[in-house]
Length: 120
Length: 111
Image (cartoon, rainbow over all chains, first blue to last red; front, side):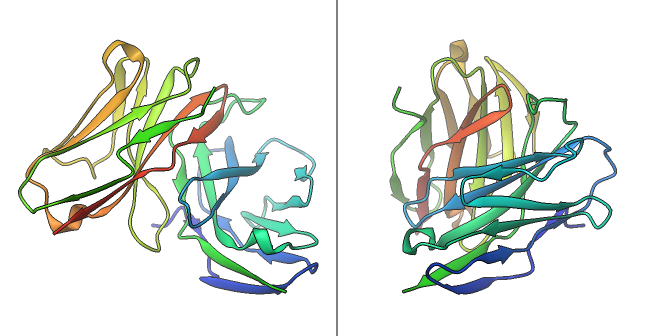
């Protein structure tokens, strides 16, 4: 069964508008971490934002925020004030067996990704 | 520090040939991971090292795949008797205290 599901193969947004990229996850582990990465056409994975399952508040990093709804098992990424440079593939990922402070190690399980296109 | 370096960036090989990829992690990172990413999909975990010890291997890592990390520094991923289904991007990541840094990957094309 898919552990991370990204149901939007592609999304379009107008420059300067906000956009939400969906991510749902499935785990029986009470401690986990959720990550979002951006992958431009050059191929490298760029870390955007992290949310631990034990975090009470939604994570924010500049223009990125994570809408974490634990009961629904969703971790949607919100990008505010989209820029042309935000056009890329976006991946949601999960790490199980998380320790407080996000210092755990272990593999990431990725979703299928969402291609975001920002129009001028 | 120049980040995680992967070489080569691109590799084209004939079916049946062996290929080897190299990953140089960030020097103070003791954990190193290999992932495989096929076109339009998310990366899939292959294997993971803590220093020189290979701690976990995915079922995706068939007998034709082998990875090493001698002396806990750089790592190599070898694919023997390549098949067309091995065509993919091979990503390496290193980590320290829960944060991962990915390389730009090696794109393998098997013809």
